[in-house]
Image (cartoon, rainbow, N blue to C red; front, side, top):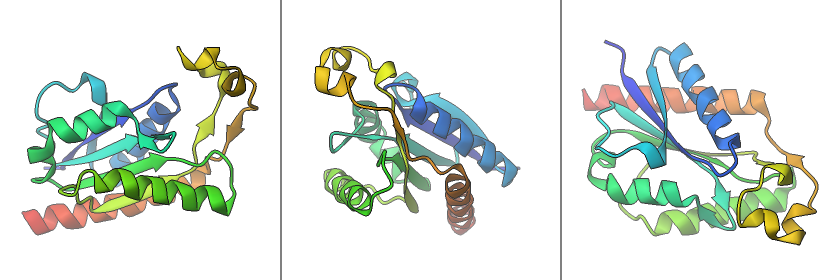
Length: 174
């Protein structure tokens, strides 16, 4: 029986949902059944064989739905293999990637029990046209130019790496 992977995502404007869908498609190609759900809509303990949490960094923090998911399902997330995908930098500048890694490390330090089998930071997207309340009313944010640092080939390769890590962890737990 193929393992089932819950791909839980936390998004503000939808681009993280796009990434989660891509993660699920590639996991399926790698022989895993994947179910994609917004983290905020998960109201019971995930029964999947493994979990991939896809959550963007916003102003140095993981999306609040991702933080809630980690808190609410702590016990289950220590029992199954978990991977983390983080869309972060919206520009391809080394300082942005380094900053994203530092911000993520600070966030993960708040969850010392959380030990993902793989953590991937990938390029993110910034589209001021998709800002929601209250951010759309902040002039400096609204006036920023759109940016997209997603490299879909690199993302697909990262998902294949994550799939291999999850499969190895699932075999070790079997």
